[in-house]
Length: 309
Image (cartoon, rainbow, N blue to C red):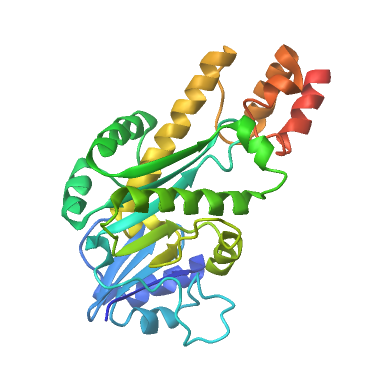
């Protein structure tokens, strides 16, 4: 049975692995990788970020030689099933994937998308260039999103800053994301019924136990066939498609905010955001600012200080 394991290693361990698998290395170039090797039927992909992915029948055994699975740290028993164990040939299955964008940005909304990719569409989407949105430029993302939306079923939820600020005191950031992912998945499952995905993959943003704790308070809980893994877009094109649609919607909303305010609105939560927020405060006070930013961020207090100088 094929397995997938993901571990994070230090630079020192990565060097040791590089030497250890020298004879097993494959002559192939994959973006952002240190090396790709094969041991028996198991493929080892070592990324420059320090993450190493093991895929194949002996993935768990080979990975255990180098470190703990990212998703199984703190597990009570090493024999317990880890969240990183995906079904065999996962990338070729009919999968519903979900991802979100905007949670860490002061300006702009939180966008969550669930996308369903039937196995017959996998090759077509990959041929179109659907992959990790971080590898694409903003214009490519907006262009690809429009194409994807014509080809596959999806559900997109957009929480504008004004709505976000109303919800936020009751829902912390993680709880809000759990609620949004669950709702997008629930709506999409209804849309595609009676078709059922072979798996549902959520781009992991919190431990599985935490997700399940928060989802208990939601009305339409989705709990069957759920899998959680970081960098989900590397495991199925459905998550990559959801990521692109979410990112495009986020960028379009930022653009709309920029036009409404008459100034370029940045993404992220850095010093530029503080300066722009201070200008918005000067223009219309906290009431105007609350329509465009997530008020509980530390940027709000920084912007107030800049505005009073």
